[in-house]
Length: 315
Image 1: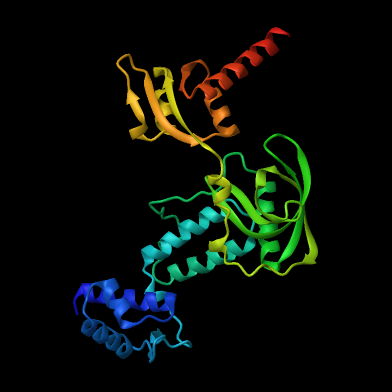
Image 2: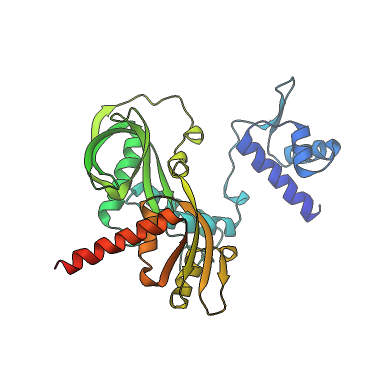
């Protein structure tokens, strides 16, 4: 049996385990082979001891018998090592004991094939979701919220908005999100009477209520938490940076956005969300930055600098 066929047979098994039922035409289209080849593959899988059941009709197809379970031999040692590396990254940002237990189980599976996993061998990729400056308190919040989501318990906390004002919120948490090394919780906010996204670093006095709730019949994939990032107006920027900050500029902007000038300065053309983060980021470059466009952003930066000068001169 060729190596290519073995890989295809294994891929068919994994797809049937994940998608439950698929018809022969779907499989043939996915693997770019004939229906006859798929029928032969399914027969070979069945002969190998993995029971495949055929269902007739318009909603019919093939699926693996419900009672069948897959064991470690279908995951290579390298794949197990990748799972271990990812779990270590999750564990670094959460005090969740369940993650630790799962990590130990996966390590045990890997050790049955080789002693090299989990005993000092470094995976090519290190995943670390723990933000710089994070504390045990932030890890505890992740753990508390995960438990509240699992147990469908309401939570209350004091939330500080970007403008600095704080307010008590009661939320029915739905999911935790890690984006850009920052933790968020997404849930139904009673004060807003709508789903909202909350940054964990702005949450204080977190309390998990004994009161439970019945979740809305909505899949996580259909929730609109991404709109909270995409809802901010975007602005086209033209920025000129002095040569002294060229390393930082190349860290922050994509190569095709940067134009090298004759005297060493860098001209950047980019699009960004017009929010407080943008304002603070531009100010952080100090005298090394000149905002060329748009005029409104240039005036805003100028006004901020004038107010800073007035504050210091008044002292």
